[in-house]
Length: 352
Ligand code: IPM
Ligand code: MN
Image (cartoon, protein in one colour):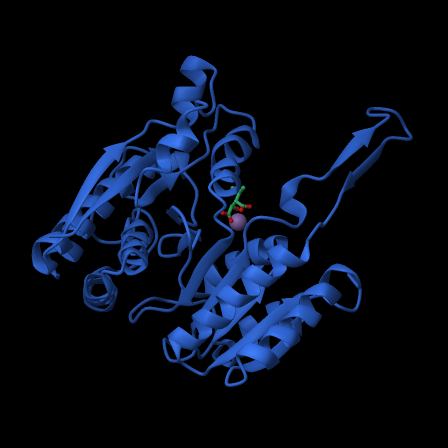
């Protein structure tokens, strides 16, 4: 029987609560589909940092490399200055584990309300492939003459050909495997960022023409992408973009699929260890109340199983989630689901 080692990082705020439900559903899937998951929990997060002064132990990255995947709750603590945990835990793990893809499906499940007028599940079903290792996020830059009237701050969008190509190849492969409309859209800003997105655009067409002639290529500026994600989301199949644009457009995508209670993502290293995390944050004001929606975390579990090759189990979880959104819960919002966090986990687990 296949046995996968999973590192669990419950993290901060409501992270631990939603992780419990994610694990509950994963355990149910192991029983039905005949494989094993061995969980080991790590306490990285705000509470640990406040107690010990250490954001991430130096051994963490090497320890995590021994796992088949990482299952993360949420990082972010109201008593810790913004940036410390995000950069010190989340971004550090993404970079050091070279999780160079951030995969973010935007899918409206049945029964879920979208703010987009006259749009339903048949219109909102695409995937954003966000580059996750470079761009503005590498922090190249600095500040000089700080706190003077002449201070200068620079933060550069840096991409090399290697980073761009590996991301584009992943996106083409993903589009092919998804086999929906076989259309890959590059989201850039070639009219202003004439160096960085020129590189992206040239590489996009070169790789596409040479190795993926059956995949239709489209190009949208990032501002226009936002407009069409609202007006005509059905145009999209797979969107590929750089780190910063990907961060921004996937929050827009998330709200069109019902919000942070449902949006899941994967930080993927196709050759290494990947980490699955709900897009929503730690939601401190709902912590410990058993009212937060665990579906995003549960959905991450499905993405994780798909990544590990347990495709059937992954699909079964997704189907069970859809049954719950279509027939059970009243709203995705915390406290308005008509059920508690653990009851939602129970229903999804039972449906497998
Ligand atoms: C995300 C988050 C992170 C990001 C933050 C918390 C560093 O917004 O996963 O989208 O910007 O990537
Ligand atoms: Mn974000």
